[in-house]
Image (tube, rainbow, N blue to C red; front, side, top):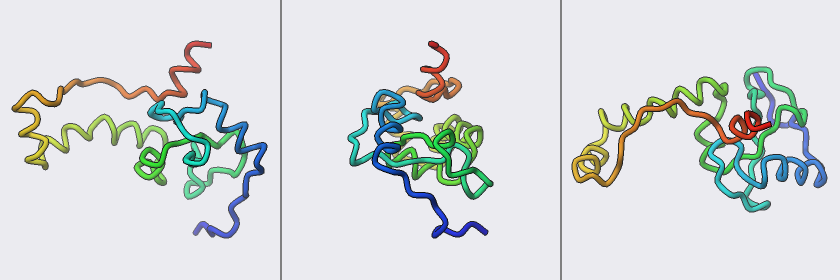
Length: 121
């Protein structure tokens, strides 16, 4: 089992480097991040033997980091891609918003912000 006390603390310089790595944006959804609000996510979760190294860190907004938790990138992608279907099935609020045209359903593959940037290189 993973011991939280063993986590490596980032230096201020490392944290700043990570913050700027993806244009001061969440590596997942791409929303703008305030430096003080940025959370550091492990691309490969420590829970799944991911390492505390800069190459395994991604800047994340609070909501993406909390939703991803200990998931792999592919499990996180699948959870996002199927979220609409699960909400439609389980949420009357979602279904009423859909009937009134206040939300739009579209089926597409999730491409994370950091993947889009890497594709442009």
